[in-house]
Length: 107
Image 1 (spheres, helix red, strand yellow):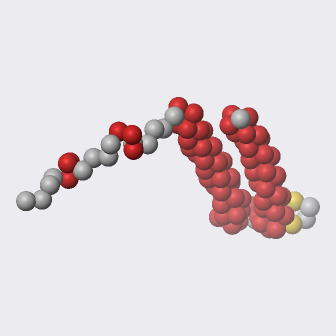
Image 2 (image 1 turned 30 degrees about the horizontal axis):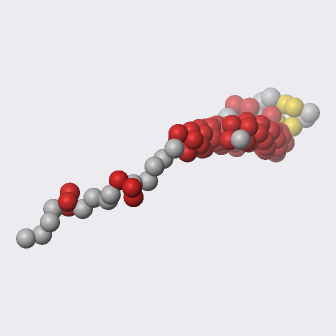
Image 3 (image 1 turned 60 degrees about the vertical axis):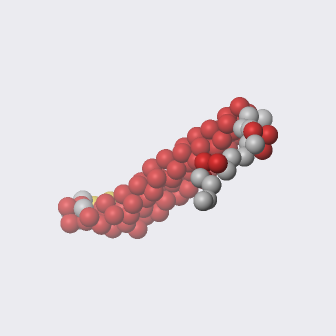
């Protein structure tokens, strides 16, 4: 009674044609986003380590003094901030380089 779904086909002229250039551009975009994601996750792991490890090992680091302060306090108060600034600097530099590489690939 009703026609089968397979009977509804577009004419070949209406089928979209994807050029090789479009396929390579899509592959470049996927490569860009995978590299961006890897960089972001790696730096996020470094951020988590800089935040949590000084707290986790605070009792063991309590006996070590650095400029008169316990090392655990120094790492939490000063060292983590330095790591955070370093993370931002590294992210900005690597993303700038990645953007330049991808701009060269695109055209």
